[in-house]
Amino acid sequence: MAKNFPEKLYIRLKWLLIKSVRPFNTDDFSAFFSWIVIGNVALIIVGTTTFVSLVLYTVNTVFAQEFVAKAIGNFITKNSKLTVIFESAIVPSWRDGKILFKKCFVCRRPASQKKFEKGSQTNAVAAAAAAAAAVTSIKDKKDNNNDEEEYDDGNYTQFDLTIDEVSVSLSFSKWVNGKGILKEVEVKGMRGVIDRAHVYWEEGDLATNYKNIHQPGDWEIENFKMEDVLFTLMQPNNFRVFNVSIFNADLPILRKNWLFYDILNARNMSGTYDDSLFTIHKKQRFNDFNEQSNFRFNDNNYDSNNDEENSPWKRVTRLRVDNLNVDHLNTGLDGPFGWISSGNVDMIGDIMVPEEESLNIKEVVSIIAKSISKETSRYYHAHKNRFSTAAQQKDISKYFVLDLQIRLRNVRAAVPLFTPELSYVNSALIRPIVGYINSKKTYIAIKCQVIKNIQDFDGSWTIYDSLLMDDISAEVYDAFVNYVADEQVRTERAKKITFWSLQFFLQILLWSLGTIA
Image 1 (cartoon, rainbow, N blue to C red):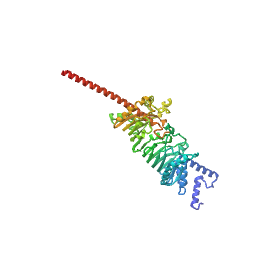
Image 2 (cartoon, rainbow, N blue to C red):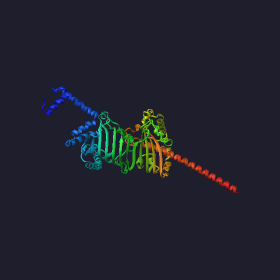
Image 3 (cartoon, helix red, strand yellow):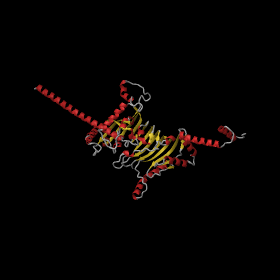
Image 4 (cartoon, rainbow, N blue to C red):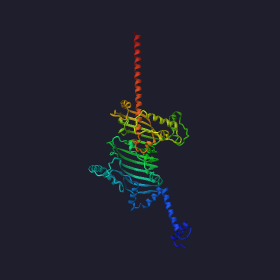
């Protein structure tokens, strides 16, 4: 007979577990151990974030904060060349079901310690500045020493970033499948400097040589959000320093190997680039929620958008950049953008990916065929053949279309000295194109269409290594050629009309003189 509460509780638990008051035996203990192991394994697989949060909550005491920060930091930054410092403890966020990192500092410099530490952001920024200043002394030391020590030349993007808050959720299944352990990531309050002034390229080097090579474990984040971001960007070749800000960004997926492509297909993103406002968002259509909708405002206004409403594209993303200085586009670039020396650019682009389930074969094939036909009369990189195989041409779901509208404002151009990328015939059009650009005192409107194989974005992180900038430049060149041809036709027509008018005037004058005589 139980005499106190602990004994009563022990008897009730024993009855609940084995339905008996007999003592526990070996089979009972092995069953308990099996259930504990299976339960933890199931918790790791099903609720990875919850499991890690419980572990953090258990061990992240005042005395264990240093150990927890170091252990998690070493796990996250394994094989990465970063210095990361935590000012606050790493704590689980039970309300959102995520793990919260507050007051973080992330740095990549040649003199970085490449390990996690715990401290203040202020001290971290000071240490990063000292590390950046030490780069020159390291290079001098390398020049004086001929030993075989590993040397970091700093030929990569360097950065010093302070982050107010980072929340992540984890997925064991993603990690097992080689897609990284991160499932969702949200970043708030980022400040700092991204330094690319040390980056250089060898002569004849290609941007495509620096594409990311996919490896198992590369992160594929299912839901990425970012807000309140401001950093200073320093570009190579003594380009002026400017600021980049991101007000908010919401991406349904962000993959390391498809970084640039996923940014172009963001749910929404807005910010400024060198004080030029840019936005990315889904283009709104009336049939977004009702595919069978035939709603019309009136016959006159709606017909112009009817083709757009019945578009076969899976998703149309609107990209807009306002009042961008043209020097961001003409640096080291061939073609018309490289010839323009000053001015501003407005761009509006509609990015379209085919809908595989209800694909309009005829329309998509006609668009791709039109793009292929242009290849016969346009220069392209010898190392790149976008339409290389018949199988790629037949698989039309692997293409996306960019309808681009460009407005050049107050631009001035100069004739380039050398144009090795153009043929002799196309080189003859340079002076007329430059003359046409300089003759327009206000703006020049250009509409073009770029068709790309989606595989071009595999491993690309920028507009250059995906060759999208080269495609846009080529389309702009074609548009200028057409404009110059139209201008010449109009000039010839004006000359003929002037000559006809003068001839008619002389005939009337002679007829009048004959009448008077």
